[in-house]
Length: 97
Image (cartoon, rainbow, N blue to C red; front, side):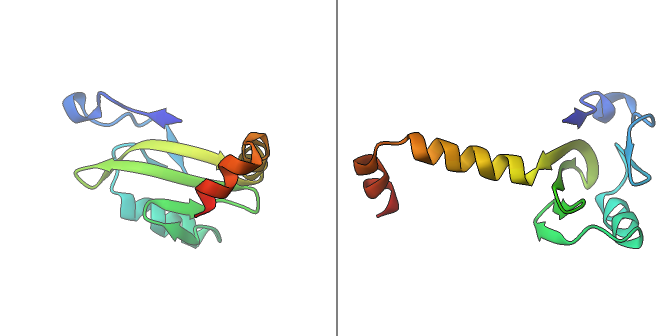
């Protein structure tokens, strides 16, 4: 996670960027630059693909990027499957209903 909690008070931190979009810039700028570079398939709101294994999620305040989160999708899927396998079968049955 990368964030700039002080940007709303002191302006944007121009040292952290993703795909040429900096914290504090409009989120649409990140979307445009990502698509221009050949990635950025939208998975859900504020969630785009980065490559075959990674995706990017961001948060905004007043339409400007204030946090960036990179997710390793295969690793998260493995962790979710492992967690599910640790749940006793009778508990899984009640969760699936």
